[in-house]
Amino acid sequence: MPELPEVETVRQGLAEWVRGRRIAAVEVHHPRAIRRHLPGSDHFSGALAGRTIVDICRRGKYLWLPLDSGDAIIGHLGMSGQFVMQPHDAPDETHLRVRFTFDDGGPELRFVDQRTFGGVSLSEGGAVLPDEIAHIARDPMDPSFVDEQFVAAVRRKRTDIKRALLDQSLISGVGNIYADEALWRSMLHGTRPTDALTRPAVRRLLGHIREVLGEALRAGGTSFDSLYVNVNGESGYFDRELHVYGREGEPCHRCGRPIRREAFMNRSSYSCPKCQPRPRRSAALAPRVQG
Ligand SMILES: [Zn+2]
Image 1 (cartoon, rainbow, N blue to C red):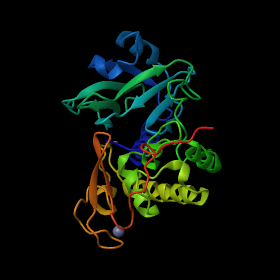
Image 2 (cartoon, helix red, strand yellow):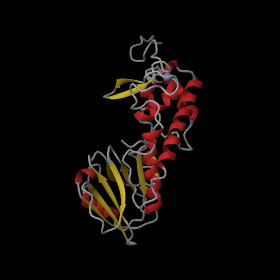
Image 3 (cartoon, rainbow, N blue to C red):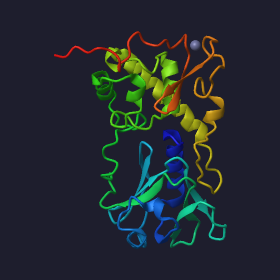
Image 4 (cartoon, rainbow, N blue to C red):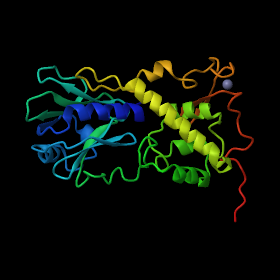
């Protein structure tokens, strides 16, 4: 599943390939890919033909493409969505969902999605910030992210730290993998109650999140040498740099203990039993004194 670094890599690739180009036509090959656009595919295509893509923006895992009309195209990759640049004569991908062609006759943009959890939609008046995305917090790579606001919000939450990192209203762009990696660097178990963390501990964790995302971004940032804007949640980062995620039973890179895997919200959490001891109390089980 693509996370922030992959989506940012897609954003950069799209910026290179489609910024400033005027859309000639839009073909919707599968209605599910535009299900968020309630007026349907004819309306979607009609609203986009003749419009110029002004820029490519991102918040968390959402992309939006402001248009010269003041509207925006929203793109969400879901589990398996990809934006692919192709010459016209390239055969259609098996899972081609939406095709955008351009007035200049250059490469076309295709939205390809095997599982169709992702999609594109039109946000009326959404060029600056689509309403559909406005509830999502900024991500820690965003220059307008306010560190102290995040630190205070985390400490006010009565939850555990990994859940807080995945809470899109607090911070966006941190998925399961990056949460585990950042927690390992901070030597915190994911079930540590947020209200028991000190300010410096949360600041340090935020620094580690930035480190992890930055490294992943650099590892994934080289995949646009070719015509293909092609992201499948598999940047070079996943092979080389992971310390805990997916490493159950392998030695901790810090202390040598075997990495443990624990169930977490239908997924798994990976941590080192020595470097990241479980807290004595968890946020969910702790008795709380009100008032
Ligand atoms: Zn360890």
